Amino acid sequence: MLSLACARATAEVEQPEPNGPSAAPVIPEAPAPKRVRAPVDPPPSFTDPNRRARLAAAFPEIERYLASTVKRDRLVGLAAAVVIDGEVAWFSSWGHRDPARQLPIERDTVFGVGSISKTVTTLALLRLRDEGRVELDRPAATYLPELEQILYPTTDSPKITIRHILTHSSGLPRMGRFPEYPATPPDRAAFLATLAGLGLERAPGEGRVYSNLGFQLLGPLIENVAGVDHRAFAREAILLPLGMTGAAWREEDVSEDRLAFGHERGPDGAPRARPPWQPGATDAAGGLYASVDDLARYVAFNLDAWPPRSDPETGPLRRSTVREAHTLQRIAGMHFTPARGGAAVEVVGTGLAFAAFATCRHDFIVGHNGKTLSYRATVQMLPTRGVGVILLSNYSSISSAALPGDALKVLDLLADTGALEPRRHVAADALLEGAADVGALIGRWDRVDHGRTFSDAYRDAHPVHGTEQRFAEWRGLVGGCRAPRPIEVVEPRAGVVELACDRGALRLDLRVAPWSGGEVTELHFVGAVGLEVPAEHRQAAARALKLINRWDRRAHAQLFTAALDAAR
Image (cartoon, rainbow, N blue to C red; front, side):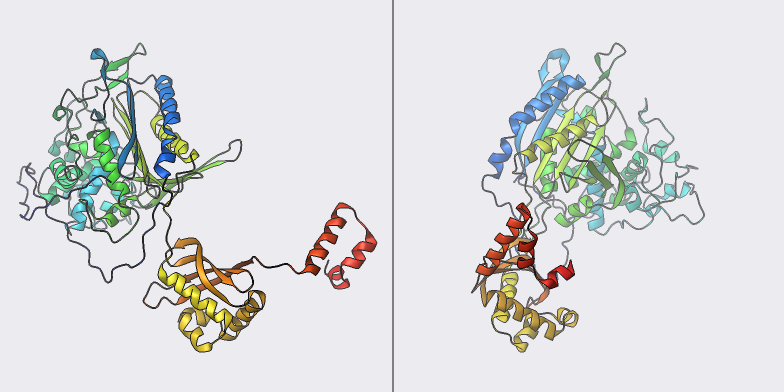
């Protein structure tokens, strides 16, 4: 795992000057959350010691596939990486960062990453939230008064909140009243002046409309709260602590010997270089530049937020905050595509800036795509699998679905190895202890022990006489039971446990309470295994099989009882 340092500072932040923010941020340390008690259950982990090697078996096919996409889309250049457990496990590149000089693309070659910038801006804003300096559910105009000038579609529309903006549910249009790619970069005052009289497309909270404008406004909002330039704040609060030293908010801040020069399709169909895009004060939504090395550190940090655990915090944001940003906040839609061999279904939504979605093959994908006039980019991560994919290109004239689809194909190729498994939980001691107590009650019923073993809620829902009768039936089936072992652990305190019994084994699905004592709160019979089948049952089964192969009324009458015939 990459080492993630945290920026520390204790000096107070100065208030912004009337003419705008300063350029020298001082980032205070985010307060640690209060804990009522330390968790005692072990976090899930990867159990296959050969997992990395098995995943690496997909790299040659990934190389071949991406090489074919370079030809398919006539890309000027492409950089690709697979991140596993916080490290770049595979990197490759095609084409050139500067075709005129035939310069190759390296891991530190810098590309425009477009709307991936939104996730960085969001994490910087969440840093302010964790410090208690903003609230996501307060009106955004509290922190950016110019938002009071917008026009709401109905008199009962709620005020736009920061959460509305982060989930693309603010009602703000995709773009504001200025060109998406202006010839002259707008300054802060000119940008905010365009809000006067701007109408919303729908009431805030009523559906999802992807809005670049909303995230562009987060730049000035952060500046008002932090008292510094939003780019400098994001750099000091997020980028530098993660070691993203090659990342920059303006192309002129990228060293020419590392920049991948952006291209588009010319009138003759051939790629042509484009002058740099200058978004000015709107760059919080899409102005970031970064390399594979930079984004690999970013992916490592995001993946390291999972799973929840009690390890010391090592990043510039709490892990719980990053998980909050990844978690689905609003569903954008569901796509159904008929296909040979089974339909493909995809559920797509939004976390806090991050796209969060699931497919039939991948249960939880988090990421974002990026596009400018000169570049394309995508980052897709599987938090429960510890894997991420990065694709960057310095050619923009391709389908918006191309790179994201290619990233999903890379994930599919990794899944084809069979090693793209989720972390597995280990059974907590409390689960096995609860199962052992149940086994003891099966062997010898005791009402006092019954009261100690099961929670009040369970005993209210399952009267004692019914539980006693059920346990007696199990005792008659398998005898006494002991020595529980986990079969399928859903959570540390929940799962299927097998008890070794006098005759075979008993499998039970149970859950124990998360509080001290760990009483059993749920119990379900799964099955009995390893039981000896009585001779008369085996004989009856053999006779029934003969009837299936060749019907005989007399044999049927001899085998089946009148009661069974009546039931039929």
